[in-house]
Length: 59
Figure 1 (cartoon, rainbow, N blue to C red):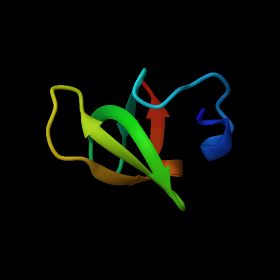
Figure 2 (tube, rainbow, N blue to C red):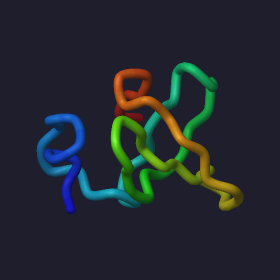
Figure 3 (spheres, helix red, strand yellow):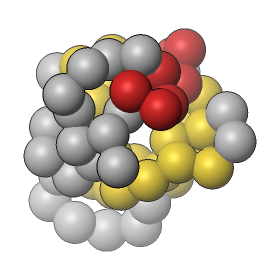
Figure 4 (tube, helix red, strand yellow):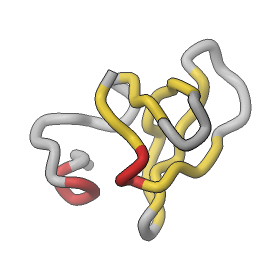
């Protein structure tokens, strides 16, 4: 799965690049998506959180 299906950013594969969640001021790896949200896991591991796609940017 690429994020093309999620937000139009070509070539990004979940888990390979960090994403900044500006709403929560956190950075993590995309693990997947459901509806309008990305599931993001902290870079050092830990519990995933949901982030609205428009509130995220590549990092």
